[in-house]
Length: 178
Length: 196
Image (tube, rainbow over all chains, first blue to last red):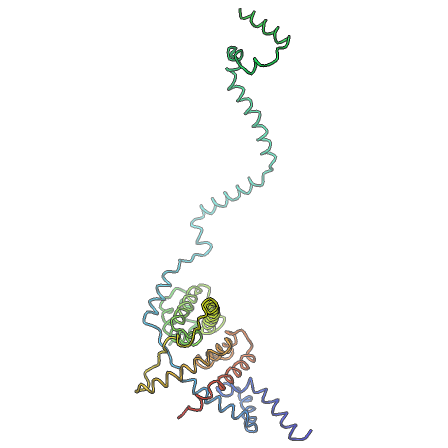
């Protein structure tokens, strides 16, 4: 490899390294050591020197971008948006008094306790409820069952096949009535 | 003695509404301009700027000065702008797919150019140059665009911009180099006429 090739390769490598140095150098924010390094490179590399000059011209051209002013309604509109904001309250802001907090806590605790009760009790209660309902029905129908006239004229009973015992029983009953 | 931005924000946190007014007055214009250059729509830029201030105001109670105020504020602004650009791009894509409507540059709002030039011709030239620059900046990838705007026009420190864009300082410098290199090529015609 000739000296020229080696030199070109070294410059190309350093030019790639200029990527994160040139902008900082041009805007004047580079540290003194980095500044010196860039200046030394620019002195020997016409490509980077031209690019640095182009960047300076570009930055001047970018200054031509006009500055726009916010509209006159900007502040008023922002204030309206701020005023429309719902009042924000922290967690404790939602607890108006210690009494209410206690009441809510007690209610929740009671609900949890009731929910954790064994379900067997429910079943027992429902089992106990069935005979009670049957008893109530019987008591309700008792006057009807005791009324002989109603029973004797009940069509469904008259259609039953007559058994000797039943006939005898009926006679006995008739005799008793007579 | 003027209070720093962080101090103003801490005062806002303590309930001083006047300090919020001071921050608003100080950053209203820079924010609107930054957002306008990001989204190229003055109405959207104003709306987004208000949203930034609204978020700053909402977050006042939780504010902790872990970074510069401008870093925090421009980070909010950058995120809002990028979301807006992406949403708008998606909407435009939907429109073009549904109606085959070409949303051209003719539909862009007229740019407000300060009255520096006395003649109409000079105003037109200035307007044309500004439009060219804005278009070139807007053609940059989103992150490069934000980096250039924050570096060139807001003059924020490298560490601030790196924090806003969530990248390393070294990556940011490379990003800026590539962005300016693209602009150098895109605006070559404009640069040749500088100083004429």
